[in-house]
Amino acid sequence: MPNAISIDIGENTMKAAVFGVKSETCKTVYKGPVQRRDIVGQISGIVDQHKGFDGIGVAAPGLLDANRGVIIRARNLGVENLKIVDMLEDRYNVPVFLSNDAVASVVGERFFGAGKKSKNIVYLTFSAGLECGIIENDRVLLGKDGNAHEIGHCTIDASSEVRCGCGKYGHWEAFSSGNGIPVFARYLLDTKFKGRKSKLHGMKTITAKDVFDYAKSGDAAAKGIVAEIGRINALGVANIVELYDPELITIGGAVALNNRSAVMGPIMSRVKGYTINRMPKITITPLGDMVTLYGAVADLLG
Ligand SMILES: [Zn+2]
Image 1 (cartoon, rainbow, N blue to C red):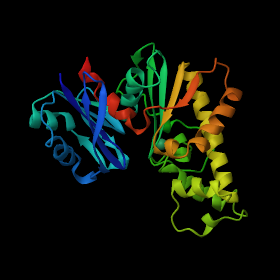
Image 2: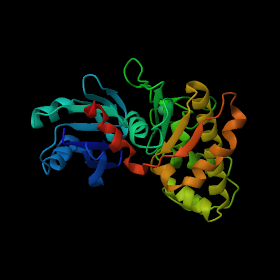
Image 3: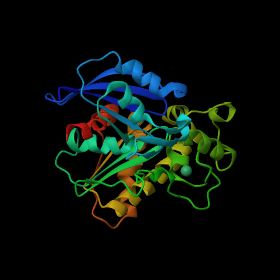
Image 4: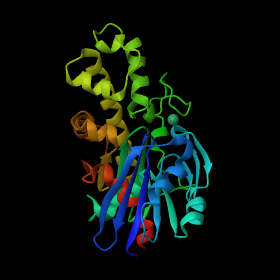
């Protein structure tokens, strides 16, 4: 196979790359806002520009039926029951593989990133949502429906009043993801940090970027919010250490990549205090925001 096209459908950004099988290189050919109303049309517009490829790998967030090639529900994308594999195979007449984006990422890490020598790896993404891909003894852990990556919807605070995007309360994603942080920040500003001076109090909308940026500039409430997020992330990563006993945990996603010390600091300093298993190596992914694109084509490489 000379080349494969790799597609990463993010919750906000669509990315595409051409993967050269011989050179094992991934070259970005597209990066732009995801067109939620016509995702397949957007992908076709990108793929149509290329010739001489023998397969397409697609990574997508949310609940999938990877065997049937269907995105069952990607809430943040507004997508339900999208038969993306059939649609792309009919159009291009090449094999198309669908995988969850966190699963693709851990595979990318295993073959092309920090995990080349590791058989037990977890890749954790802090992006619009929060997910993890798991490789256990060189086997991708998928679960009965292929959704073992949904760690963001594990309850990390059973008494919390903070509502997750899925509608349930106290899920990890509700506190630490790009979509969750603004809601959690608002909750803390109205409760625990009500009396703390902060520019965030007067803001109509708050983004995750605002919270980290203000914390960096010394804003008292923002610093408190980032500390709360850090405490929760350390608990979550500690649970990963105990659940999967990995050799390596790599961390990516825009929230982590854009705020490395704020996200990694509490994880590196606190996880050991919560766990009994031997500590794995924990690091930011060296593949950055390309990690998913590398992994999405792995099924095509045999
Ligand atoms: Zn949830």
